Image (cartoon, rainbow, N blue to C red; front, side, top):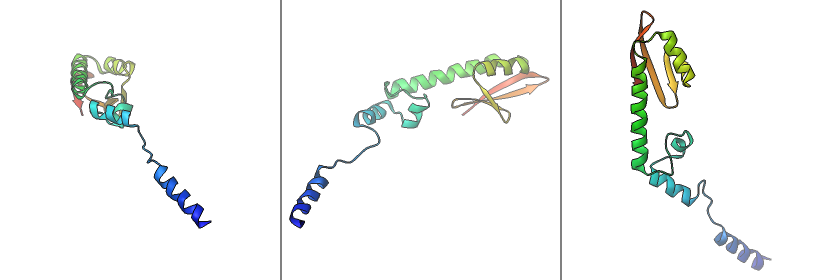
Length: 119
């Protein structure tokens, strides 16, 4: 019995391959793109782009949010709040959050006098 069992155990140990949580192809995409599984899942990084393309995309996204924040200055807080809610922003403890972005508004006399992007 031992003569049969030992070769079977040795063969099964040699034949088994390690299991990985992600495939080699997906791992290569992550490395090429500079993404992590988390950034790819929360849509802040695209595994089908290069590191440079993802960096440019993040930079242009920050610029567009900055322009959006600037456009809020001088408007009434009620109109700004309606605009932010319609655009998908969520209020939390005096700040507005959307994805990985945080917007802080400075309000005087019910008018937005400054809007800050906080990262």
